[in-house]
Each structure stands twice: as structure tokens, then as C-alpha cells.
View 1 (tube, rainbow, N blue to C red):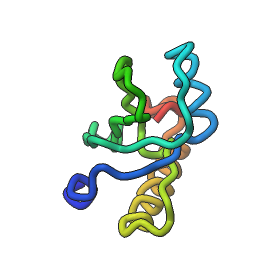
View 2: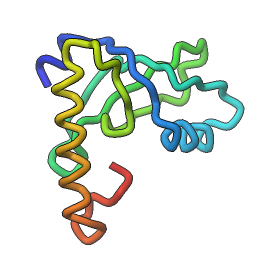
View 3: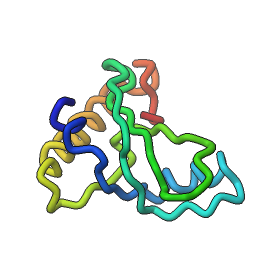
View 4: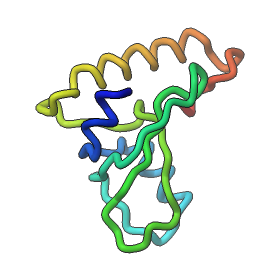
Length: 107
């Protein structure tokens, strides 16, 4: 977490399923997949790492917080390997816990 916070803002890409969900939440907003991670929070074992996103639009509302697992970062970034390892571990862990684990597929 300390390394991530020190590296902010980080460029990222919203995955297609995430972008579709964001368009549903903010109809009429022109959101490109390119965004910046401007803040991060650790939401415990259940929530994982949450990222505040900036899509570079003038209108800052609504604010989007998403799981880091729904983002893609450039592999050339210094922390890319560590982020990818966390994402892989997190997704695997969520699949093992399943819906009964309370975490569900939305994280």
C-alpha cells in the first residue's frame, strides 16, 4: 500500500465490464477507458484495495471507487508486476470463497 500511495497518480485502463457498469451508473457521461488512480484505500480482506478514479473530465461528479482488480495498468510501470500479482491472488481468493464467502464477484 505504501508503494502504491507513493506512486500516485497512476495511469490505468478500466476493463470493458467495469466501463459498462460505470456508464450505467453515470448515463450521459463520456468515459474513456483511460483513467488515473488518484487515491487508494484498503477495505480489509473483504473489500481489498479500492481505487478512486479520475477520468479527466471537468465534471467530478459522480466519484468512482473501484476494486483494483477491475483495472489494467501498463506493464512498463515500476509497480506493474506487484499490482498484477495482487490482482491474480485476489481474484483466485474470491473464486475460492464463492458467493457464500460474502465477497461475491463484484470485488
